[in-house]
Length: 220
Ligand code: AP5
Image (cartoon, rainbow, N blue to C red; front, side):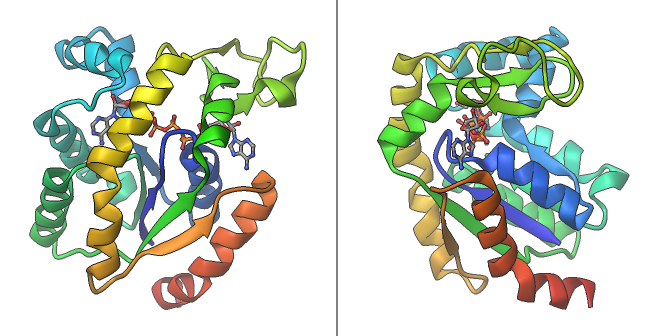
């Protein structure tokens, strides 16, 4: 299964992407996670990315396409993948298309999660992420807990999750990424829009329902 999961910041791409990736036994390829890893490792690419991320701006396309090319070349991605947060610009969509062509590969589905802006801001400002295993949660779920429910690791707030940066990230999404929805809707593969409001379980069910036919075709 080769999927793109799209949607604005805070729509639930990471939360649902983890579940879909587990369900279809494919890696979740999040360019945001790749950049945060590079930043943690203190690599030149990570240091360059940091100032864009903290300002809520997009990291340059050549950096992103370099990361994606490396990820697609790994054995884990040989049979399928789920992109989370990529592509975000027309240049990235064209770059992905060229990378897939060069591997005689093609996408099976492009799905986007639809969530109103005010809910996105509330979700992101309360998000906490486990510094050890990456599990995503929210202050509403954890109450006074300071440890991850999955592995006990420390829960942290992302440096780009302040309300001001979130508003900028939403503007950047509308300006640079939303046009891709039309691009994929007009492509032969089409775009599937899923309501991203409701409980996490309900949204997972809705995603699995719209992907059922594709999964049957891919897995037989
Ligand atoms: P990235 O890490 O990709 O962030 P994003 O796209 O802004 O998306 P988020 O991770 O904020 O949200 P999400 O949709 O994954 O939601 P989540 O599941 O966590 O990118 C960060 C930065 O890196 C960018 O700003 C940019 O600078 C750079 N970057 C990354 N990729 C790039 C690219 N391709 N090109 C250029 N630059 C790039 O959920 C959010 C919260 O909501 C959580 O607290 C969760 O618990 C909660 N939640 C989830 N579902 C529900 C629900 N159904 N109900 C209530 N709460 C929910």
